[in-house]
Length: 463
Image (cartoon, rainbow, N blue to C red; front, side, top):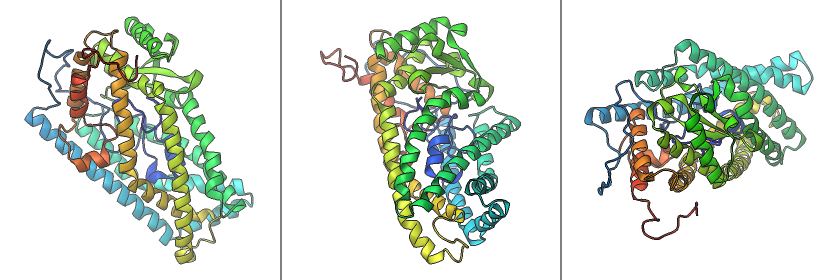
């Protein structure tokens, strides 16, 4: 999956991705949201099989006329509903708790004290950011650690993860280190621009942010992913599957040689199933999790990969970057406008000297967090549209390469839901707020009924 929020395989929140604590600047969230530590939003479509889940079937009954939607046995459905509710509660609690923390930082003048400390260390603006930013980010991270721990406890309780607490904490520390490095750079640029142009900083900072977002997509698979998981060329372990995926990439027009098709050892930490395409240009690669290979047939893995290739062929990666950049520009403008009102009313009480004061950072983070939270349904709707297109592309691109594409795709969706404990019939409100993908029942029914070839029609994407 490309590391743009809207492009993961069967999930809106792959374990390789995470929300940065409290959306610490929307750009930091865009650049580092893949780090596998923090509690995830509850669109749980990265499947993680429970130990009691039955082995996946490889096909539906031949000639089956009746469309079979996604279902679960009563006991498992009750467990899925309980898990979903627990995650939803954690999601909202995490948001509210984060907002209260930021308000507390302002009321207690925590960042004003950190700014004073930074100014005592040096008069140089960059050195001040080097002192201020890590202390601010780490303080937020430590204070929000309880909700992160709660999220991991839920994943263990519902058998979505096998990662021990020591390994989890090590990954958390890695994530904080990376976030601090990125944060120092971005916060320095942000306040440099604010001080140079108090009225147009939101636009100039956006100009600086866009190339950083693209750069992050290019270097992430080479530098960041290996910090959390081990990768092995797939042809060394499963040569037949590697050859099948290579044939698929050729047909899709996204030729990726076998030396850039990898198996990721997800089983060391996760029970989830997934595969994805990441990177841009020469860093583009296909990655299949070892858990997926163990539980799915080769044909099903190829279909899963076809879905991900669809994001590239249909330019979803490009569109996702454009969408993210447009949203970022809007968010920055709103934050600029609203921050002036807040600082004029309460700035002196919070010990903030003005918009260019480092102590104003919690105000921007708070505003960006609230704006991002309120925009969630809109971004999810856009994501669901793209994911449906990728499902359709996946069915089209494997047609002719794999016999009976619906017979391959539909049971794959069923297995994904069973092992991920996804609710069979989420409410409209849950779908609106939490689902970055269409619900599995919709996806499974579409896979079984989409067949333009038998009706003499022409597929939309793969001619």
